Length: 174
View 1 (tube, helix red, strand yellow):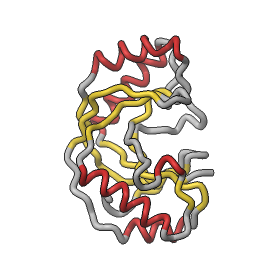
View 2 (spheres, rainbow, N blue to C red; view 1 turned 60 degrees about the vertical axis):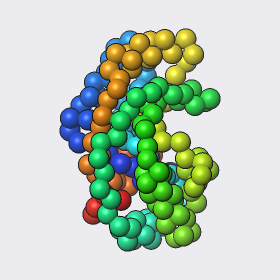
View 3 (spheres, rainbow, N blue to C red; view 1 turned 45 degrees about the vertical axis):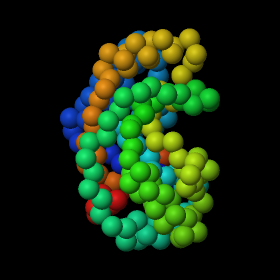
């Protein structure tokens, strides 16, 4: 079981992204809508942990200063080599520094940070399709480029158990 520190979005942003998921599903492309436990919500993961003490991680994150977040601008389609495709946000150096601080704070509790979320290795993304086949890429690109650019509003920071989809909101946006 893994634990992710995720930024989640306001209702309008979530609706736009879920609409894109539904459009892709209707075209035969599996998205987070139907992936694993089916409880996924649109999100941007700041870090993902393999081993952790939930209370220690929560306390470390709650001790971080509150962040003021404007909208994130999603304006590109990306794909990882293992078939996950996603929307790429433009991020400021301050946003990248925040991710770095989050990863370092949880690592200081003894948590094991997934290698793709270690400071300096993180590539921010909002997942669309976790198991994209190469022949589906034109379908995804057509759907995505019909709606981009999209601005989303970050509203919450949550701890998400990736095995069950259970979410625990933090007291403030970090």
